[in-house]
Picture 1 (spheres, rainbow, N blue to C red):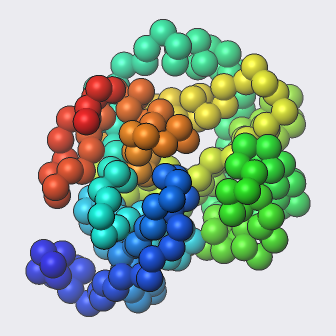
Picture 2: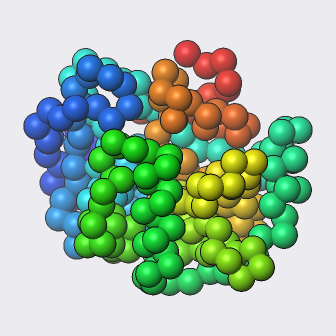
Length: 244
């Protein structure tokens, strides 16, 4: 593959996983391409991998590469050109009182409690709703790249936690979990807007939001942040709300 011609990536190996049930589209089988060895994937190397559509879960770096499906499209928001729509502006105003603080990757019982409640309320039977503490730590708190953890508090009460990777050209949103028992809250929208604003402050270009999947309710929302680009046939190109 062309990645192997890139000198910083030349020491990596890429292998295909066996098929497994797709988490997003029912009745489909998925496969992933995995980059190894993990200890060689430092910040600069990972930045290049993200530009080629890869993502990480803990120290596991992968991209979907299914046999008969290309529904997963890597998506990034052009932070400096982003303009919030009316609904997003309302979410920003609604949660503007949240106090954000940045930390190295760290753990606390408070985080794990919120993570468990979020998974059980928002993603029941999604595979992570019964994560034990070790699985949760391996997923969110293990990293060989430049990562940070962001707490969002309201009157001292923890409302949301985000893990973000710092890349050469932007930020990669790893995972966010938040208080699920406030039905009028729009923490998820606010969090994406906050990351876009952080990206601007750092004078970086892109917020990578993972994979957009048009026919997955959980993943289709990402084209709501415009302008956005999708990696299609190896080329980053404009991806609007109505893009195929």
